[in-house]
Image 1 (cartoon, helix red, strand yellow):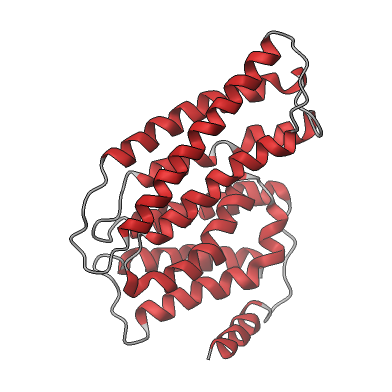
Image 2 (cartoon, rainbow, N blue to C red):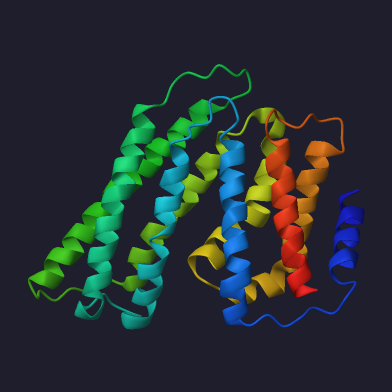
Length: 259
């Protein structure tokens, strides 16, 4: 069945030759719509009973680290030097905000009312995130101190970025873990097949070519979620219908730009 759906998705998106969308057109017409889809998705899953709504601004704030990370790759491709001192300070300031939000999420955790909420695993992931966040913050504090004191260091840029990327991985797993069991697999596939790649590659890193290269797989992931929640025996969760429709409408408007 899934193979058939994939075939249909490919036929649909390849019915016409793909149009060339340059970076300016992408930034003006495509990226804002994708950002709206991301916002729609997080508002939608926040409707699940016991889903920690405080995790959404945490995810959004974590996304803002991307700018400094990308600049650091250019200015300090191998080792951290004074060339990227400004970016280190920017990351420190942003991690302080992330830490405040993480503390809020942890403080508001509670026992679930839903029978299918796997909050123990979710809580463990949030606790792990908070611990890793503290370590990353300490690493940045130390790096910033050495740069300010003009003390030579041999800290690799890759190691620092890897530490920050690990935070993204943990929080992404936590988001999915808080989805009720009955819907978890549907949303897991959509999250890692559509939301996370769009969030990382397009909204955060401005990789406009990613959309063109992966539009078929993104289209399949979105159509599969819509079918699973609306066209099978599984009942669409309360209040999510309008969000699903809106996401679908927004996505179709993008397909008209590319085909």
